Image (tube, rainbow, N blue to C red; front, side, top):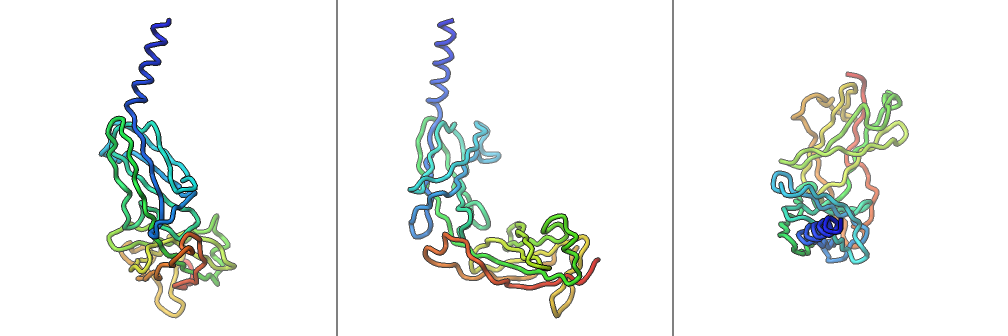
Length: 234
């Protein structure tokens, strides 16, 4: 029994000794630390067959997050600061930091969050179709993309009889707005109706320049860059 227990303890010790440590330090482009940032470390798909390691932590006061007992392998490191104007480091044209951790090694990797900007699109509804939605965005969905990038959904919230759709996007960038619905017909206030079923159709947009300074770490309201309207049912 003693031998079995000793063997199990030795095996556990050797397994722990074969793992390593990843320290992530999150800051903005000015070099300021970002406490409270959500840091994600995960095995790189198709590049890491040695371990299925995924972990999430909140950065400490100095912007750091320490991941222990990480097996050898290739990892992607991502970070975001919820409620801020800082882009997720693994979204849009940004790429997550890649790292290969040898057996038993300790590595430190910096992650810099770039400043984005909020884009807002308002859809007015004099026909009161939105009142029949199960939840905001149920009958109408808006997505935004950058060239050569897949679209991401915009968040919808009710504003009276209207819906405001918003998304945090790269600053000062050409964008594509995709308007989709299987039920509603949407048009420009004084223009032609949009083709709601053509996956190749988009409305060109351009995001505003980035907010500079400490304000970038705070969420900000924004006026709609475009107003559309529901004109009926398809």
